[in-house]
Image (tube, rainbow, N blue to C red):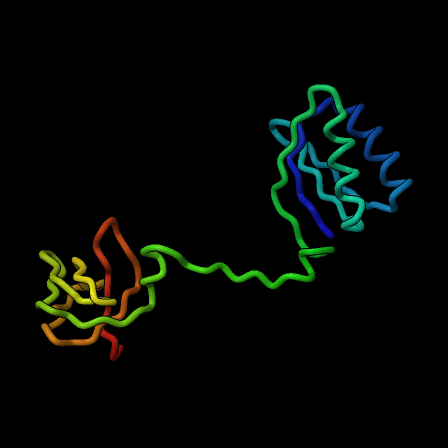
Length: 149
């Protein structure tokens, strides 16, 4: 497992902690100074990550934030794909233009049984009755393109 953390702590204390921890738990690390604190890149067994966090919590006045985690343990076992919800779920859906869709004034489309304000993504006019595809959302307006494109 590889983890990147930003750490604000006394340099000597964090160096001692990392040296002892790396020796005992066979961890490799890089500690780079930043404008505020340090960037800590570690590579360790995922079972030992909790122990590292516990020890960082014991450093007096230390603050840390996990920036990135890659591989190891549960991260290897799960293939998580984000499920779009709410209006984000509309992106990629096809709909029917109920009125002409003008780039300036917009128009109306019917998607999933609901009426939505919409306008084309480019400077073209999409005529009423055309199929369109939602490519993004701006406020309460669906930005669409012709579904034949």
